[in-house]
Image (cartoon, rainbow, N blue to C red):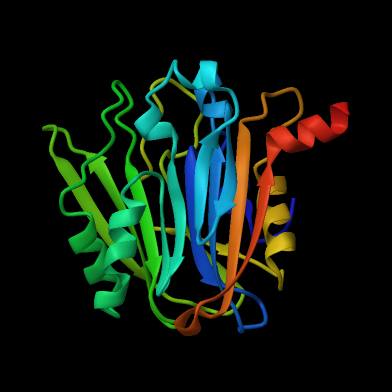
Length: 249
């Protein structure tokens, strides 16, 4: 496991993951979106790029029908006048706000004002989101179910520091039922990669299961941008289902 990713690797089942940071050269801002899943409907997914959007799509229609499609198929990352990322359809609302402010916390607060945690009892999965609006400013958000059933909202503006990333996930990381939502502030990770392919591989490797345990990995996407303001993006995607197919083929 790559040094610097211990805060990720120690989590047996983190659910969905967002990491925002800057690569070790200082030239590129990056956004990572990763998916882990336990149920067949969660595992039956992959990431794919369609134009300027990275979608979470199905790999098996019949299995996917057993879950809530609106929670399983969605635009995860939108590349526009900045980068919008989330674990649900709220990504489009974040994207629509990117051109209206250079304050990432303000963008998330306005874009997510009508969104709540996911309606998937008994877990009530948090909605995690993020955005990068300039090469200097980014923020992460989590919306969780409060004890009284209300939506508890937290927004964190994160520094874009060379070789570091800030991670938020839907779950705290322990593989138990029901899973516990992520708590606290975004976790710091360290990266020594200078391209999206190697960074995606490092995250995929960090999510690998311990020997003898189930592999919950579904997909990892990494976006590098040397020029957010002018719309320069490089994308790498790893789908576990495709690697399994390659091994079997």
